[in-house]
Length: 395
Ligand code: A2P
Image 1 (cartoon, rainbow, N blue to C red):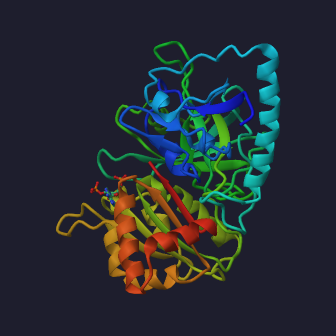
Image 2 (spheres, protein in one colour):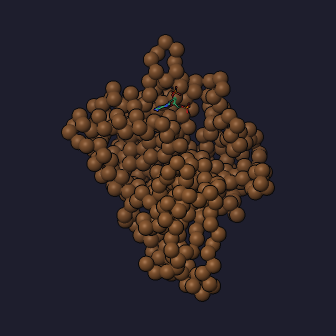
Image 3 (tube, rainbow, N blue to C red):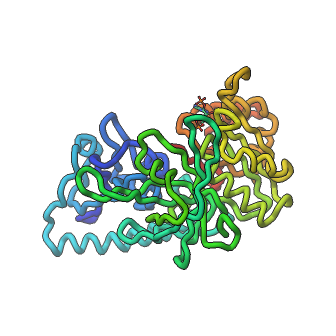
């Protein structure tokens, strides 16, 4: 290994241990123990997939070192070590070499080579990181509408307008919202990530705006800020982020969408995109959408108006009086034939978005359904990932 090298680290003092980076790493270079989430220097190929998904910015830490910190050393970090003094010349030589290597690796990653989580082959190339913490975009709130009528379950549809600032965002991408003010240590708050719920040409077609679907979390600094926004308020925005959870542009591709609660945001964007472009002449979309009750299911009314021929919907409820509790994975099982047929079609793209907890149940359902036609789910999933047809975004 050429020395010195640039090493990717995670700041243990800021990291909230949400493991989103670990899930997004296509080569399993990020691991955790009971204390810290860390990056394996022997594996990391600087593909940068983990950078935009981190809700705190703790992922974006780098040191130029002669000997990379081992996993064990990083598990023991309570704070990041300072940059070693390598001598001016040595350090700068290493950085230049690494900049070249990173540029080459990024170009390679953009070609879709290597890694597991890939964008669909026919997806439009996304713009990412156009606006940063140091240089955010300013958006104006065009509307803030309550989507749920369930007590204590406040989900909002927020429309942000970017005026003259270019903000090219694709369905499935996210943006960061910077809550105003500073934290206890006087530092500005870091952005929180929200999925875009409108299609690429805007919430209102051909307007430079987008929408978010945000649930008010008890004590949540940013969700309360966003849910309380008023028309005309100005919001600091970073992004757009995300280069793999994108929809295929191929109209004949089939989408199998599984979501809970606000995880429906990208699914709404996908659906609207198809409504506006190919209409019912698309390959088909099948949705399993879980919520507590109809009143707690975001976009319940508008969803009901989307023709079944365009989007075949299974709305599944866990807390309706007099009805047994049902989760998305239960309905997938009772619709085994339809899911099995889609799993065997090379045109199918799978999207899972919502509660982290649902992943295990959904994986189990896929395992059983794949067995029903004599296949092993893990092998099938690997193929789907390699082909850019399996996408997960959970929190
Ligand atoms: P419940 O909370 O009744 O157990 P929301 O985020 O709007 O509350 O919606 C999330 C939905 O996902 C709820 O219906 C919730 O049910 C359901 N849910 C909770 N845990 C799981 C799980 N492990 N698998 C699938 N669905 C889940």
